[in-house]
Image (tube, rainbow over all chains, first blue to last red; front, side, top):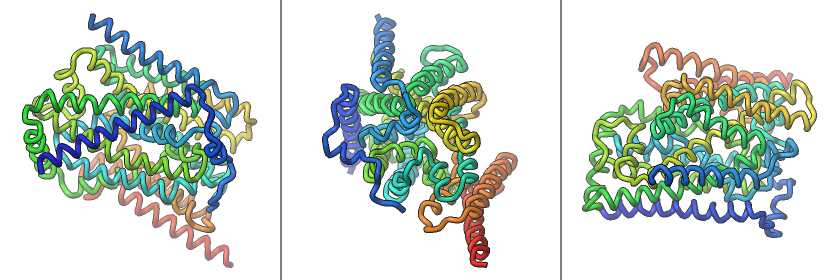
Length: 52
Length: 464
């Protein structure tokens, strides 16, 4: 039980760190002005599909 | 040598920040200033959302709570996770699907009328200024403790830096710097956790579990059920759809991106709270038992980390606070321009951009001036939450979901909610515990009742 508690806390910390690494990679791409993929560009059209 | 290392780390961080601001570019149009042209990917919006809600309360405050009451605040924090996920599923996509909306007030203007938009704008701008003052106060405290400079000067310094890049680059600059700040603290804080765990707990597994059990038992023993209910209510409702979150929901590329950003941010909040509570638990083996909650994190860092590590953690804490501050400055400025000035004065897009920049500076000045008067970080935040939720939430949520929302219901709900929230807070301040429940709950009930009454009465009138 004790090891599970500590492992859970450690897993949360590792996942938080993974989030930081993911955002760092995306931010570097954004700062370097990497062009978005065609799918992303298509998604960025202002017209939207779910009007309330 | 220590001073040189510290200076290099601090200068390095601000140099990278300046580079990101430079690459984000100066906003040339109002749409760029207010919504970043809706061009930013999910990862950056998610990071910005997390960086905005993770302020001093969810970092310094949560470590202190973990130190004092163990898992209690993790359970309370679950209400916040639930709120963010529910907004992601039910509110954010609907908000995003409204065409040409820049703010929550704009959305309510679409669903009700212009008067409701202006009313929402006034409340939103006031909330942003109030929360920005709390952030400025927190930033001042951190810098004051580390460098020994006066609180007012430290607050002005941090607010000035955030104002420069927010007023120039608008939302894009705010989101990109938020992402950098998120990356900094979400890598450094887990590193501090592992470092402290390995260094301070010889038999890490047993000691950690023992401390956690002791703290949790003490936490539940010292907190009444009413207090727990009040905390859950504040975490569940207090920050729902506040202007920076609404702006980010509207700035996404699509409804799906809006939903995904909020869902990821909700899941991340649970991981973050778990880590902060764990850090507080680890601190119990190092920091003296009587230490004040807000001082636990800084004491832990000072007692365990070498000078380089201390400076890195200072940078992480400054990042935590600045990311929330810049988001509030930008949201306040956009709300002021879009919901108050534009409907009343009908200004052009070009003038709107200038107005947005000037409003950023004005809100920053207000926040820096009021920073010294903020009583306590958590108290300041709770005052803002107690006013926001009853005033805005019923009108906003029902307005987005009802097929034909009615104007009298919105106005009646906002006026009743604001009056009840302010009145009940005064009662609670003058006669503590006289109400028996946290002020946010009766105020919210009054606002909801007023909305339903207004909706039904306006319906009768329409049928006649």
